[in-house]
Length: 213
Image 1 (cartoon, rainbow, N blue to C red):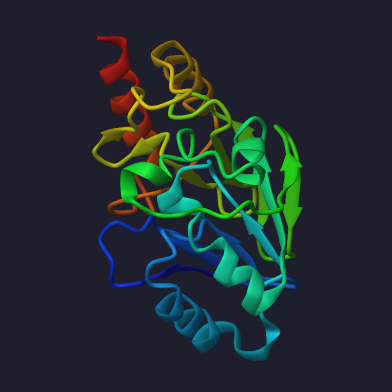
Image 2 (tube, rainbow, N blue to C red; image 1 turned 90 degrees about the horizontal axis):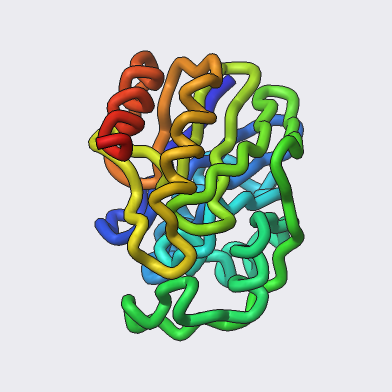
């Protein structure tokens, strides 16, 4: 039951997680500015097996920008939740904040996923948990096998994701943190910064206190 944090060497990239199993699943793809490094590091782990699915925790460019290169290399099925999936399909520079990074974003084909969907590769059973707040379509992925939460930009070890960008909402974030605080998690694996294999509930509770102040 192994997951890998893929290093791209670029500070602005999101954390990128790889779950191996009967099929290989990638969570988020970074900005795309270091895609050759990303692909090389993935290949070192999976070899010719490739990537079968990509799940995007939300639509911001630092999480989705690497998708075109990943799709050219591996031809996976790609998923995001509404309405963020529409922003990705339409290459919405404002909602994806691609303009803030000065990145030209092409329209990208993704399928919709929704709360309660399951991505099961034998070793990992990832349940989609809708967590709007950072964006309207933000999701977390709860691994029902390991009880780890892959939290995107909803919650970090150091706090919560921004709520002042397009489709962000303070009220939604507060509700989402309340929801994930009720999950029986162990580890926390955010979209940026450090990870924790033991103290996930403590970080979620602290984040919930921050938005309740």
